[in-house]
Image 1 (spheres, helix red, strand yellow):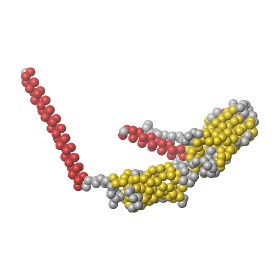
Image 2 (tube, rainbow, N blue to C red):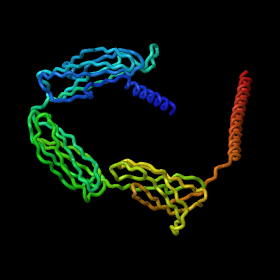
Image 3 (cartoon, rainbow, N blue to C red):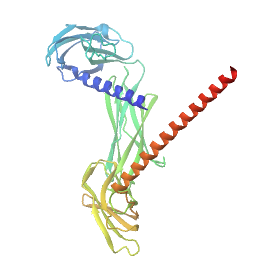
Image 4 (cartoon, rainbow, N blue to C red):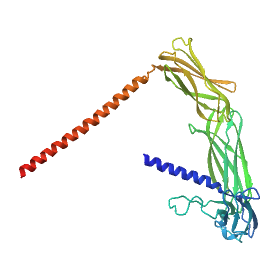
Amino acid sequence: MMKKNIIFIIFLFYFIFIAVNVLAVGIGSMSGTTNDAFVFQPDLEKIYTYFVRSNTDRPMNHMISVGGDLAPYVSLDKNVIYLVPRESKNFNAMLKLPQELEPGWHTAYVCAAEGETRGGAAGEGASIGTKVAVCAVIRVLSLYPEPLANFEFSAPDVTQGEIATFTLRATSLSKQDMEIKGVVDIYAKESNAKITTLHTDEKLLKAGVSEDLKVSLDTTGFVVGEYIANATLYFADNQSTQEKSFRIGTLFIDILSFTNKTSAGKINPINVEIESKWNSEVDNVYVTAYIKDIETKEKEIATFSSPRESIKAWEKKNITAYWDTNNVSAGNYYAKVVLHYEGKTSEREGTITVTPHLEMPSTTTMALILVLIIVVVVLVIVIVRTRKKLEQATRTKSKKRDDFLKD
């Protein structure tokens, strides 16, 4: 177990070291983004201006390089940039595309890397050293001759009674224009029963561009909970399907359970598990517990509340209140827990069992027990050692007798 813990600590320090060093060099673009994607055009030329930034604690060279299958079509105006700590310098990457590219996505990585290993010292064979590198990405889509498209599907959470809008964002991967349409099937997640089918309008998707197909669902009368939206994009004679879950919610926070067993004679945590059925965070959430006589449910034994907290959309969490049972007898008690939020309340009733308080031994008693344990341990050690000495003496006598008889 100790060996596993040591290995874990070593790996933990290693990953912390790597995480810190990832910030040691940065790359940025004068356009504000280090990722560019576009449709292939024969003989297209583009110039990208990047800057490399040093976050190291000492001056060093930074190596500029290009990778990916588009690397042969990218040239750099600098291959080495010398930077002092916190300094930034620009460089250019020139992309010149060929007459043709195979259909599909093609990529170039423009990278800046530290010219020295950091973290390892000479003569320390077991030390860890890293060379940090960061890259900007250029992606080029060469369109397919046959009809081809993909899509991204979004199914947002909504409030019960609102209109839910589903979006299929279709992107052409083809040189051909094509008609597209979408179909969205709605299912109840728990039962997997189909509820309804929605159809988008048809649209013309032109070569190499994107179009949004939208369809709406009126959630009036829908039960609060989780649902599945199964979307199918139809294009030419093909189709593609995606599935997303979404929630229909209302401003309601449910009490799932609360602690039903505790001890007399001390301050006890009473954990209340709650679950939000709302699509947004709710602040100032707290519980109040009313403890009463279990027979009449009228005689009040105690009332206590939790601190105010926040709960995230659709989150399950525990809220803790504390019950001082120093003057409470063991037995069963009626409990009503009330959850307060946004001017609303939720309630749950139940029984809390208070068990007798087990007194801890006094300091004097504990000391006597400890002394007794020590005495017993010492006696056991003395007995074991005495027995070993007697056995050794017996073996010695027996050996001497055997030697005498031999002579």
